[in-house]
Length: 295
Image (cartoon, rainbow, N blue to C red; front, side):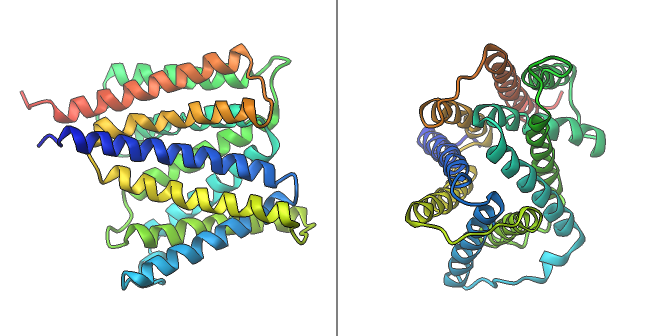
C-alpha cells in the first residue's frame, strides 16, 4: 500500500530535522570538548538522555528497566553501540567534523554488505557495485599510504563499523521494547562510552557557564534528533524517507566550515560525494527490489 504524499513529505521533513539535530549535536560535542575532557562531555550527555527517556517511559506507563535488556541479542547490540559511540565521539573530538561525518555516511553500505554475508540476504551486482564505490569513497577520504593520511581518521571508521554492527544486531533484538526504552539503552551506552574515555584520560572539571551551555545544547539536540528519527521511520514509506539521512552530510559540512573554519579538500569532497551517491542508490535499489512483483 502506497502512503499518501503528505505522509511521505512529513516523514522526509522529520528525517531532515533529525539529521540537522544530529549534526548540531556533533558541533556542540566538539565545542564542549574544548572546555572539558571529551569523556566527561559524553558521560554527562548520556546520563541526561537516560533521564529524559526514563521520564518519558514512565509517563507512558512503561518500565524503565526491562529484563530483555539482558537478552543475548540486546547485549550484542549494546556492545556494538558502545564501540560505535566510543570511536565516533573520539573522532568528533580529535579530527575534522567534515571528515568524520563523511565517513559515517558509509554505515548503510556496511549494513548491506554484512546482511548479505551474514544473513544471506539477496544483493544483486548493481548494489554490490554501489557498495564498492562507497567503500572507494572512504578510501579516497582516508588516503592511506599518502602524506594526507591521518591515523586518527581510523577512529571514524571504528565508529562507523560499531554503528553498522548495532543496526545489524537490532534486526535480531526483541520487538517488545518501545522507542523510549531503546532510547534509555542507547543513552546508557553513550554514558558508558564516556565513562571509558574519562577513566583513561581523567581530568574531570567543574563546567563553567559556557561549558554548561554547550552541554545543554549537546543533550537537547541529541534527544531531539533521536525523537525526530523515530518519527520519520513511522511516517510515510521507508523507501521515500530513508535517503534523506544523507542530508546530515550537508549540515555537517556547513557547520564544519562556518563554526570550526574547516576547509574540506577536494579528496574529502569527492569521497563524500561517492559515499552519498552510492548510499542513496543502494537504498533506492533495495526498496525497488522488495516492491517488485514476483515473476
